[in-house]
Amino acid sequence: MIARIVEPLRILALVVAVMLPAMAEATADQPWVLVNTKKLSLTVYAADGQVIARFPDISIGSGGTSREHMHGDETTPLGTFHVRWIDRHSRFLTFFGLDYPTAGAALRAYAAGRITAAQCDAITGAFRDHRIPPQNTPLGGQIGIHGVGGGLPWVQGNANWTDGCVAVTNHEIRMLARWVHVGTKVVIR
Image 1 (cartoon, rainbow, N blue to C red):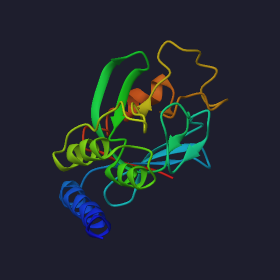
Image 2: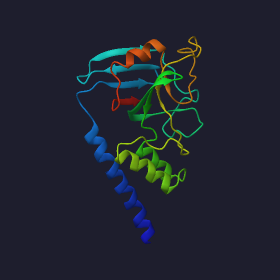
Image 3: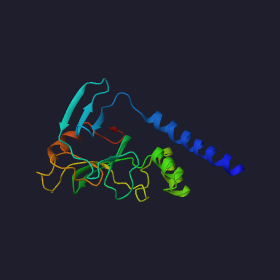
Image 4: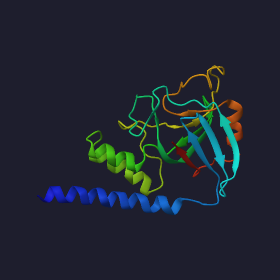
């Protein structure tokens, strides 16, 4: 009986611990990014809602989209994320790494038995402490926005070819660097 009460309280405590810092981190005066996976477009918005730039013909994961992305399924996860790191020497030219898996994804996966309590705690703890979440759990990782790099430029915009990321052209990733920084909000819907 106690275990039935303790586990939901544990999850509630983790949610509160994760959500409070995330809400405090949100900056209303910074540009943000919307990825529309139905229209295959990426739009950068100013804080006041004005469109700064729009990039049509993006590519997403070859597996489509998913609310419950798992390692190796090649889906692009849906949700609200933040850029947590930038690799300017990526094989994809520039890689804006997102804070996936999120605390919410971890809690749902734990409740469904797809990850362990230790993996869930590691992910939610990373969010609480504003660190990059573990990238090696069954939920996968290394999800971000990137260019084509040295790949075949004609593939971009003609096929969904990524392992779960959002891809734009090399020219577009250079343009995005004007507005996208660590902390930038990215909504993928």
